[in-house]
Amino acid sequence: MSPSNRAKVRVTRRNPAYWVVTLDNPPLNIVGPAEMRELMKVLEQLEADPHVKVVVFDSVVPGFFMAHYDLLKPLEDSTGMEPGPTGMHPVPDFMVRLARLKAISIVSIRGRASGIGSELALAADLRFASREKAILSQFEVGAGFVPGGGPMARLPRLLGRGRALEILIGADDFDGALAERYGYVNRALPDAELDAFVDALAMRIAGFDHQTIAETKRLVDVASLPPDAEMQPGWDAFIASVQRPAAQARLKILVEKGLQQPTDVERQLGRFTAQYREAGAAR
Image (tube, rainbow, N blue to C red; front, side, top):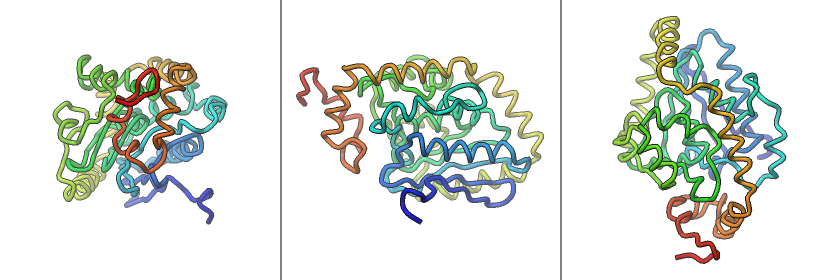
């Protein structure tokens, strides 16, 4: 199979009640329109299967859970995508539907989860991170544009307004320990213990009654999830902002330094976005 045709999102059914969705798009797990279509197909399978009770999202790409949305593909590739069942663009549509699955969704974060990677984690029910290797961020404001996958709707409800603004406007990197302290993730575990912990929790949930899980989650959703109407405006703001000259100037500098390549820019986005000056000079 040629690299272009290889599945970048793989599903493993550990048993009928417990699925693992593995992200495998090296070198960075970048997500663009093609990867979103794969994720949407997996989500459709999850929604249609009456037996699945828990799904874990993880990555096999060293250093990256999911880097961010593809900023180099032609914008019309994204804006031209057909809306999902909610009527929203596939990115906010996916986030809303993932959050409202009857099954419990868990993300296991080893490596960087920036932008849409962070947003997928926030849309999931439970987040667990490698203490040594996880990095979470909403870097977009540092690159000159608005986050598009719903963190403005989710982070204030999860962490409170001040911490949400620190993450969004500060646009810096959060390691596993700090993410745990803020409540950005449920727990940060020693890297050697992460996989076993997540697997044991998923197996435990998979053994419980399906209707009880779904009903309990539905009632928690009522108390905690943002209204669906808050999601599409974030995507619209992202599309509008990424086209602004100021954003394009910042992106140009980042691309020249190695954005969307396996370089220090991607490994240290928080540092490199802060180096930009209006004249294009680094500090």
